[in-house]
Amino acid sequence: MSRIKYDRVAFLFITPNYIIYIVFILVPVIWAIFFSFTDYKLVRPPKFIGLANYLDLLKDPDFHKAMKNTFIYWISTVSVSMALGLLLAVTLSQKLKGVAVFRAAYYLPNVLSMVAISMMRLWIYDPTKGILNAILVRFGFPRSDWLFDQKLALGCIIVPSIWALLGFNMVIYLAGLQNIPTQLYEAATVDGASLTKQFFRITIPMLRSITFFLFVMSSIKAFQVFDQIYVMTRGGPAKATTTIAYEIYEEGFTHLKMGYASAMSVILLIIVAIITFINFTYGREGYGEQL
Image (cartoon, rainbow, N blue to C red):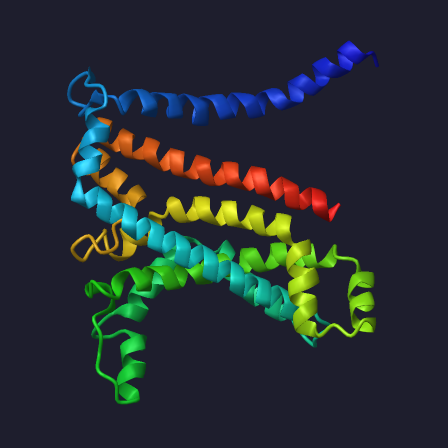
């Protein structure tokens, strides 16, 4: 097969992916950027207003609250799920009896629908019939309103999200642990290094590229959180659980302010792009060092 013919065949194989990317990702992004500079409410054609939507965002307390909640959710879910995922991976990489069952059990939430998980959590957090309050009362503690309490509601969203992310992080870390040469640990043991030193001096540095990969993937999921907010709280109480993605939905599909919602989408896109850029910059360096 000639070089030109080979290139044509390869191009035919990748063309469907490019078409899907252009139609369902690139074109919508371009339209969202365009609409962010317009006053567009679906019922009439968009009217160009320049940076007015972005200037309004700077003064919008609801958007500020959504930004704050989103960053709290992001930091909490990503840091805790990655740390626990690594610890679980290290533990379940040992030769333990029934280890496959534990791996499957921890990974199971990752394949469940977030809507189903949220519905289950609604039952757990129910202030009158929920199992969580039943346990508290059993041990002599007062009942709590959970999702109706402004101080607790966001935390009640974060906990199941960590539970859902944990299995995926664990599996990826397990794959990374299997690629670390055992000779490194053997040499460290001969030199008298403790298990703690081996963990911080060998395991964590060798998993650097995987950590950055998980960081960016988990971050993208965190900034796009919507399902559990919609099912469990609808952004309440008093905007205590409103995130950027949910605020975009509210402005765009409830208030029909598509231009304003598009401006929020662009801000979200910029945040995710910055995180992705950091991953590509430092994650590749770590990958090169591992090789």
